[in-house]
Length: 634
Image (tube, rainbow, N blue to C red; front, side):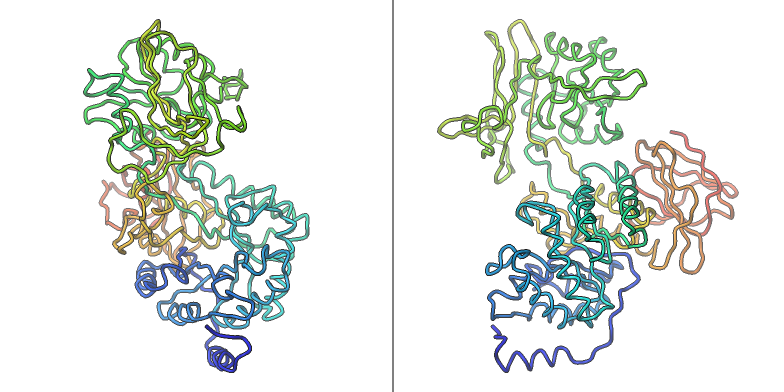
C-alpha cells in the first residue's frame, strides 16, 4: 500500500515517469477485451503472447477507480505499472477504461473533483504509454450507471476531457462504449454539447444470437447520419465490444425438449417437425433448423417454412410437431389452423418467451404489421407477469427443473424467471405439467410447462417463457463465422477499430453466456474463433483499404467485400447469409488463391478466370484478383 504523502511514492512516480519512447496509436484495427488488471492479471504473459500470435494489437482493460485508489489517500499502481511495462514487449497497445464509482465518491458525476484527481493522476502517470482514454463503460445501462442520464454523463465526460487535454492535448478521448447503439441517448448527449468533449465515437452493437447481417450495417449507417447531423461526420467510430457467446442453451438442453416430447408423444422415437419462420426477421431457414435439430433424436426430420406454407403442410397430416417462430411473434392470420391442429392431436412447441404474444398480419402491400392481438388463451394458456397482479406475482423468482425434466444432468446452477404460465379454461382430462417451477409463500410460478389435452382437444402445447431459451446461441464454429463476418461488415462500413469481447473465456458455468464469449478456453486452448481472428488479421492486414465496389446483393443473401492490401494486391471475402449454394465468380485476372475463414487453403473448381465456389455462412477469402461478376445459384 502506498501513500500519496509519503516520500516513497514520489520516488516511484519519478522512476516510472522516466523518459520512454512515445507510443503512437497503432495502425492495427484489431483488438480484444481482456481483464488484464483484474482476475486475468496473473496470466497476462500468456494472454499477451497469444494476442500477438493472432495479430491482435490492442487490448481493452478496466483501470478501475476503486482498484487504483481504494481510499482517498491511498494509491495502488502495481498492476497497471506491470501491464504497461509488459504489453509493449508483445506489441500490444492498451486501451484503458476509466470507470465506475468509488466508495468514497458515489456517484462519480456528483464528485467531480475527486473524479478529476483520479483521471489526472492516471493520465499524468501513463501519458507516454497510453494514447487513447475511454471514459466509462456502457453508461446507458442501469448496471453500470445508476439511473442512466445523458446530462449526468455529460458532466463527467466534459470534466474528463478537459483534464486529459490539459495534461497532453495530443491524447485522444473515446466516449464510453454505449451498450448497443442508443440513438436517443446519443442525441441527447449531443444536444447537451457533448460532441465537443470526445474524439472517438464508441459503441457496443451486440446482436447475438442474431447474426451481424441482421442490422449491423443499418445501425452503423444511422449512427453516422446522426453524427453528421451534429457536425461529427469526420470522427472515427470504434466498436469496443462485440461478440457471440458459445454457452450451452440455458434452460433447454437437448434433453429438455426430448423429455417434454416423450411426455406427449410416448410412442414416437423420431419426429417430423416444421419450424415457422419469424415475420419480423429474415433469419435463414437453415439456422432455425439447426437450433432445433441439436435437441432431437437422430433420424428426426425438420423443415423450415414460411407462414403461407404451414396450412397446406398440416393438411397433409404428415407433421408430428410445429415449432413456432424464434421470438414472441405469431401469425394472427390463419392462427385458427394452428389451434385446429392442436385440437386434432398435433403438438406445438413455443420456446422463445411469452407464447403467442405479438400477433402479425399481412397488409395489402405484402408487408407484415403488428396487431394488438394475443393468441395464448385460444390455446388454453394463461400467460402472466408481475404487472398482472402486483404484490402477488413476483418480479423475479428462482425456478428449477420439474416434472419429466427434473432428473436431467447438467442443469443450470440458477434460473431466474419473471414470466409465468397457468392453465386456462381446462376441461376434464387436460393436464398442466410444469417443467420449470418455483414457489414462495404466496405464488407458484411456472416458467415452462406442457399443456397436454385429453378432453375435447387431443394435442399438446409445450411452452418456455425464458427469453434465452431454445438454443438462441451459436456453437464454437458459428462463433468463428460471426467474428469474421461482423468485423468485415463493420470495417466495410467505415469502423476504424474493433475489440472482440472477449479474449479468454472464464467458463465458470456451461450455461452462463458471460462465461463463453472468449476466443480461447479458460486453459488457453484455442477455439475456432481464435483461428478465425488470426486468419482475419493476415488476410486483411493493417493498412488495407476497402474498394468502393458493390459488396453485397440487394437482398443481403450474398456478401463479397473487396480490399487492396498495403502492397496493392487485390483481395476480398465471400459468404452467404440466408442460404448455402454455389456461385460462379468471374475474376478480372487469373483466379486468386483461396483460404477458409479459419486459415485452411481451399481448391475450388477453376476454369479460365472463373471459380466455382460453395458458399455458406463460413466466409472464403480470396487474394490476387478482383471480382468481375458473380453468378449465384441459390
